[in-house]
Image (tube, rainbow, N blue to C red; front, side, top):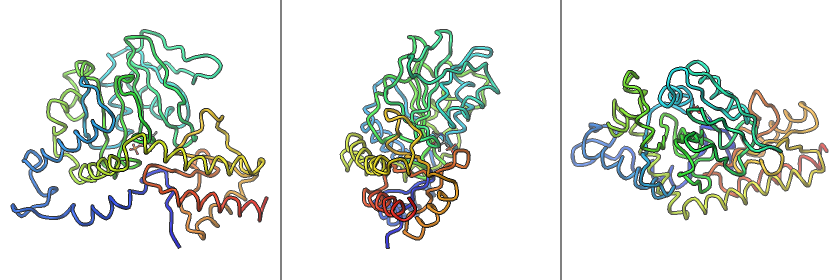
Length: 352
Ligand SMILES: *Cc1c(COP(=O)(O)O)cnc(C)c1O
């Protein structure tokens, strides 16, 4: 029986990447060292960074005035670095309150700068004051199963900043709409320990000289993301994933596959006539983190337990949200999602 991991992250890696990683990551070269054993300022590590940057830039169609930083640490570290780098002391920063992760990002920012909270656009469009240092949004709310159907346009002079951790590389994104976006690696890029930051070059001038070097986007950009020893192994895996995404046909192919996968689950929810309930309104339903509820918590526990027996793992919703959650990031094959849709129909026949 196949086993499928629907965890929110760390998440599954593509099978082909895992196989290649087993063969290549610890292979030693003529100098007697694998890449992780080499000086990070040396030729092998420089070549790795250059290859990863080039591949990623091609995948996301990076405009010329943007820089890619490969930083250690997770997305939550960026929650603190954003206000410290991009806003002057006392300057307001804006956060669109779409759900769990947006709220956590805003909470960290309040430790450093005054936060102006914006309700997500619904009947009214997003109204962004023009004195904000930036406007932050979460492209995909992993715990709530929401994704922005369309990006907002803040006033000129207020850069859009995004936590793109959950759906980075899952669909084409117009980078020029953002001042900065960031994604930690363990969902769609590779393994934990690495965060990709994409920043418009002019914003680097905002990093105060007084910031610790490791926290400064400007100092990291100057140092080619190597102010100190970088997470080389995580970057090697990321480079393998970038190559794999390109081989699959790039972001349009990822988006098409993710739409097909998500459609299987949303169709199963619609067909259930209310047995499975998805709280997200249809335009906001995420293609990569699908969340739903059953009529009672007891049934949800049973669903999760019986799913494990059917080879479908880690389907419990976020602890703060409850219910069921299936994460269908890039590396989840359609066969796994089809098996889950089948299990949903069978479970409803028995308990609905
Ligand atoms: C998983 C996730 C995070 C958490 O990232 P860490 O790398 O663990 O800090 C942050 N934001 C979003 C949207 C996520 O999905």
